[in-house]
View 1 (cartoon, rainbow, N blue to C red):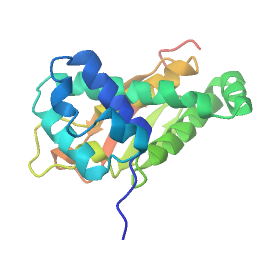
View 2: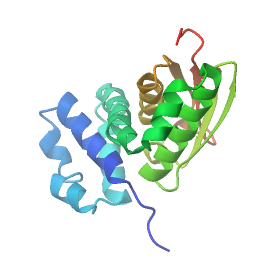
View 3: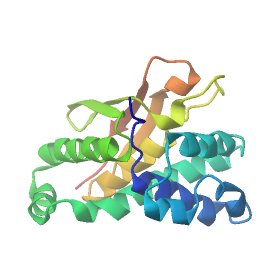
View 4: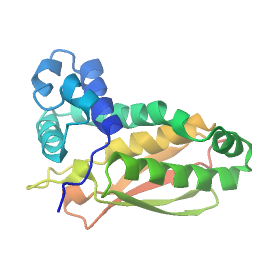
Length: 192
């Protein structure tokens, strides 16, 4: 059985976020996330997991880096949506736009890491996103804090891109011992 594919955008966004927020540590992480390997698409799950494992030891920097990496992933891929899909998402009534954004987010997450699956429930602009297969939450010992910030940043940025402000909070995390990751989102404070 072949190793699950890791999308180049996930690796590149993580690499860029590390260099932006921890410039003095960038060289250390290039052992796992080298630009040459990223360009060639030769960064596998083990290298990414190794980098994430060391990143978790960086304390509060971990949360900031993975949040920014999730945002970069959206910024760098939303242009890949068909122009008609982008136009439709912008023009849909708010309730349908929220669902469309969540479907587009689910596709992006599968493209970033093929074993990751996102399901959602939404009602009146608020709901729950369930995530299985998070690469960020594969741990031996639970760290005591949620590790799903990449997906929280990704969701928040996707909503922002389509003019819907959104609060996203991690309510459950597989990394802390839960069976899956769960993020709560609320777009009701928005007037978009």
